[in-house]
Image 1: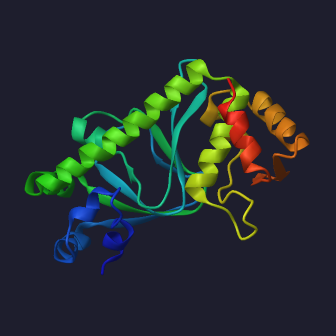
Image 2 (image 1 turned 135 degrees about the vertical axis):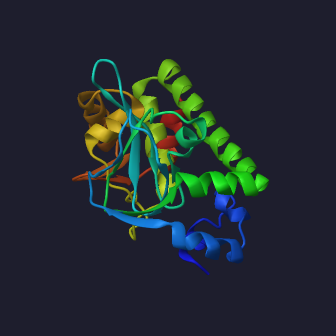
Length: 229
């Protein structure tokens, strides 16, 4: 079984609809790229020439606001697709992507992508479903930013990171390393406020902080904070 099929065989990936035989015909046309931490994958305003699949590592998808502030839209990890909706819409990238740890990505050229869309209607449907899920997450984030206190948003973010990325061997430390600045951008606040709230959570023994690592000590109480009005 080819690697790309293996890593995209989950039901959330549009590539789960392809058989091994189809993937064997696709494999020679794919390109593999290795990115170092903080290396740019693509930049807002540039024209896409294909789409990317995360094989390993993690990347942040973000936009720069009119006042120059970075707003992180999402964190991509293994199996996630990058840039495909810009490709479908035939528009320039409306966001940028940068790896936050050493990562491996596969690149699907534009010509191959549209051939798959044309020849496999189920693939097109799966892409639409993937886009809808991403759009719903962005709407949820917009509602959170406009209606929830920052303290509540930080608690929710920590719980989401815990659920999505799991823990290290100690069963407490979230298995992702993010700069405080990136955490602040994820909850759409400034770094000073984010640091203050994390310090409050540590004082309340909800979390522990070791460098950039965050350990969840009391997920039950942290959940209560996220549910407060």
